[in-house]
Length: 161
Image (cartoon, rainbow, N blue to C red):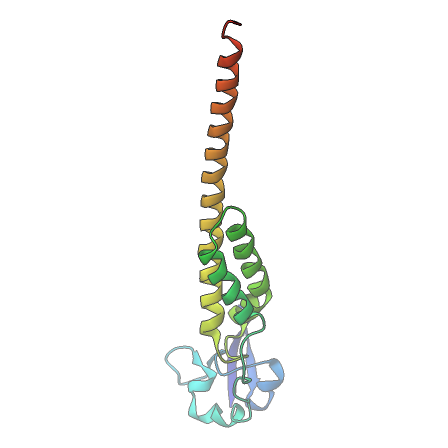
């Protein structure tokens, strides 16, 4: 039986069932054939189920960098001191960057995607808090510097005794 498939946003076909896997068709690839009302994922069609029976389950373990990113993100919130929270949050985002891109492409590559998403969220919160705390601390420091400079300036205006 011939199928039409959508791969990378392009409609291809007609394609014989025996050629589908060679084209990179996955269970989530949208397919259509004569007699179907609308496009459906290939994995939802009983007649194509045998093609995907050999796909292994997700690899055990976490996404690379997920736990480290989570720890850095939590530390960036806990140690929300000027600059330190900012740096820890940034490093948390940096550690999880490549894994998060891969997760968006294929979320089934590893188990534990929730830890990776949590690491990204916590690192983003820590990074933003780090920016805010650093900005406030900088403003306070500038204020005190201006007060000190103003006080020194007013001392020089005093008459000598």
